[in-house]
Figure (cartoon, helix red, strand yellow):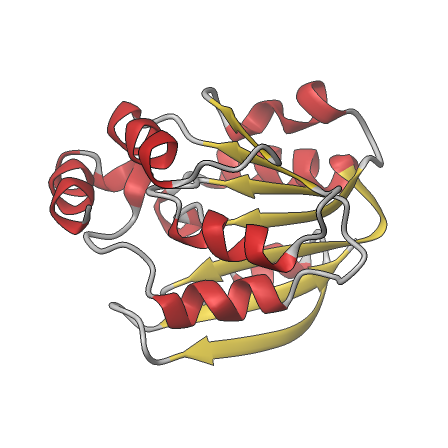
Length: 179
């Protein structure tokens, strides 16, 4: 699984953002930040499903996880690695989140997208769409490998906590925000 991820990531670095899949430490920290009562969760950039599995372990039996992924290799890894009836794979751009779910409908959005590699206009469009789709006080969780976009994200969300996960390649920052 790791070799396939790395091979695909090398040829698609702009969409993958890293050469390595998320560690179990990063995945577990991210999923622990999802509100306990979350019934509708969306993951942006699901990759090989490591974070998805961790999220599903946190969710109730009735909750739903919708995973956006556009990389065909990652979509296949996701299908192969995560079989859970609560999960749906969405094979198009995360920019469509408001069209797919409507406004004020999601309890949490977890973003694994490499924002540092996106143009500001695309980040603005994405943050606006995520904000619209979240319920009032909905959670937005974003992880990054630098603090470059911290101020940018704070323009759209009340970021309450910043966490650092050393046991990941590369180490990562997690922003925990609310609408």
